[in-house]
Image (cartoon, rainbow, N blue to C red; front, top):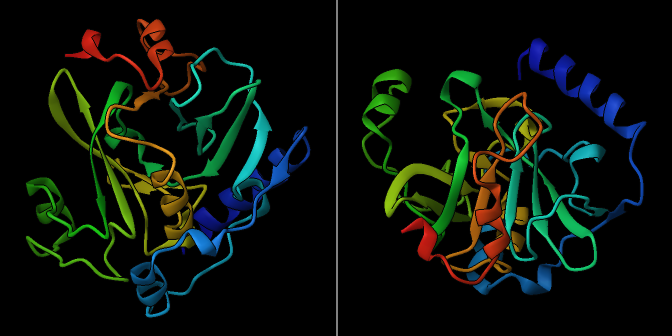
Length: 226
């Protein structure tokens, strides 16, 4: 991890830790893991760096109006929220894309995969020098779970997925996708379904993108997005 990223994470942690309210941290429920999850997570070769406290999974107060069952991504703060009933949400720390590679808008989960393989895009292959295919496994950059974001009936090529670089949770270094720890990816995956609405907030605007009322559909009807 670069010194710049380390300093950025430290500064963000100090600022966020001073303004948290009604936060209840959640420990990972390993009983929800499948035998394959336990087997592959035991074989990871990356350093399973603990996530800084401000980015640990937690139950928090939630003041926005998205319906329960929706996902809201706040890239500026490096948080993903899974909206619950009663003004609460599960907040996950995330890694997001660098500004030039970020995406914002309203999408839905169009497909879901456990322990996905990685098919890098042409630009990722050219930019990162990675192979055209990486098989599923404990050290795959896609991690333990992937939720594929679709908009207007088409794959946006952006995903919510796990990571083999937990040390970057809270940073902006990915190729645009939204990364969680593998443990958090499993937890979120177990809560959502195909069709779940995902709102990715516009950077530096602090509010929903155009037509935010679409998010109020929550886990219900998605005809407006077809």
